[in-house]
Amino acid sequence: MRFITELHKKHLNKPVWIAGSDPTLGEYPDSFFDDKIGITLHMAHVKFPEASYRYANEYDRVEYLKKEYSGFSQQEHIFAWPFYGKCKKESRDLIRDMESVYHLRWMIYPPRGIREYVDWSFTHYKVKQARAGKSVRYGGHGTCLHGALYAAIMMGGNPINIIGAGHGKATGIGDAEHFGTVNEIDQVMRPGIRSFSDPVNNVPMIEQTLAIMEGCRREGIEVNWYMRYDNGGLPEMQIDYEEIERQKKELANLPKTASRRVKNAIKSAYRPFLNRL
Image: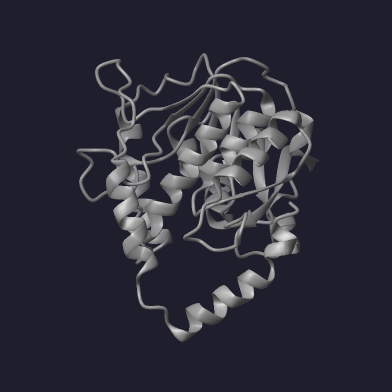
């Protein structure tokens, strides 16, 4: 297993595509990634099994794909390490037979350790680190897209193009969380999980995605966030910024339970450490 820094500038100034598994991914042709440098996020592998890289931070997803796809272990992978909710030994045992693995050290909800707070200036600093290949520690807010974006930046991707990762904001998708049969698989694997359309989930996700995109813009890296595949066209994601700000205020004003107050106090104690990442 190698550090993500070994991919530094591997695809310098070449387009890198990142595919999530939201319902819009089903609209894309199965051949869409054939001539592209592509990174699939977790179950997007089902759609594009021959993509250049597979990104994951979830143990159960990797376990499932290993069982269902015979060549999965022989392909190139990028993992956030260790897998979410798993120790290093459990993570290592799962990937022991994998031939080509790059990894980054994943921090949950940095840079301040509190989910509701996204620091745009610190995010820009991490974008600069990724572009320079100077760090293996990165983090985000509740979505594997953020880690994959840092990986694409590390590779030198420009532009970086995002599809199938609308954080619940793509229009006309109904109640599904994922495309096609993957939605059914996900419901079995994770019954009762909070929806991507829930503001508790998607508000910090969206803001962190926008912060990374802004950091890229300041570094001369173009990032295109596409909403769907529409008869060969790729309309861009439409974000209602006023609505996001309103939801942020509502979340901030939610009554804080005793457990939440204690948790945030503990997280605050780690701020000096997190700020040095």
